Image (cartoon, rainbow over all chains, first blue to last red; front, side, top):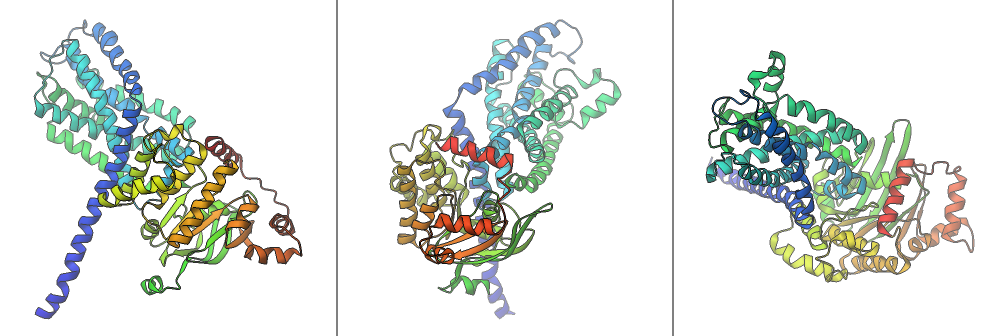
Length: 278
Length: 276
């Protein structure tokens, strides 16, 4: 017994070490992909400003008019506050859902091959890309926060709430960016991708609670909205971003759904990503 | 058994066993078997669409073979792709350095993807940049580099993890003679100082003849001749050049009717433009 125990012990520690090495490599590789994205943003920050235009227009044009319609936002929340959280989700969604186009661009150039011949697990590359979209989503959040404060939206600025919003933005952006990556792996050309991206954006945005509550919807649309992950992202944002925010589904459920859907999409994307090398 | 083969000093760097790839009805690579020794600079030549790139994409694990297999440093490309990837470097024909990052950032990204430790990164990256003559340009965006600088950066990126085998797919395409010379100098230095094995494709017969230890001529997915430049030339006749070998042997197996698909041409030209 003792003898066999002696023999069994070293392989176990070796295996443990191998697992912890693999985990730390996975983390390094994932962060490497995201770090490259941050560096790109730093070299070309102009894009951040052009991306700011859309949320400004939504809040100042659509928001100001809709705020005059009574009874859209539930309870005692002013419509502009209600909308601000939805527009935050929307601006992160728009960045993420077209994220796959950069993968097609990288494939056409050849940059993607550098990723694919590396020993990094395909899942690390995909999570890295998802995290990159999260970084861009966060930059959108900064813009929407500043804008909302200027428009007098009642914003909860406690660190914990901001942290929760950041987590939801990273998770939500990662989710839709991974979906986008899967589509990119299927269509493989920019032209086809643009068409599908446009078609997807509309239902994801409008069949959600982003700009009006689900209670205003006909039943069938309410059902669709309930299976739309954006609804749960918006629920988190509305709860934590607004000082008067109340969650419809509970933050734990929101985060659990976002995390589960992201995990499934990452698993699918990791299997499909290699096809981009063909 | 595999480990034994790897540890033995005479282990072949690359071995192909009836490697085959089909795209629908087209057989792009047809039962290719080949052995490449450690420290060899091995040239692959052949007309466009002959299967050179498909062969390299299989060996670099980018594309799974339809049948057959290959081993690199003793590891199987089909069953052990992760092990293979750790031991190879790949400089693709297309532009693989990211133009919206600096040279240093590109190096850092590669080093991290290959799991090069922080300590080794701090030591290897500046040294590799210096060796490639890129120290001054290290903090400039690669989008502003010349074609030759990009190629040198890409080679440096592919070497950070000290690969056993380096694949160079048309490394000098679109470069001026001076830049081509520099690229080859680096390649020779890698073999002479570090005994790296290199597999190179090129359309420049003069380069292949001057720098490759052995050459394989590929046409219609098959190797139709393999040997040193002198051996290949001797097959055609006295006074023959490698160009003669190419023209004679390729035409002997039928007109090279495939000039590469539109997509390939577009990609090759774009690469040429971006490198130029």
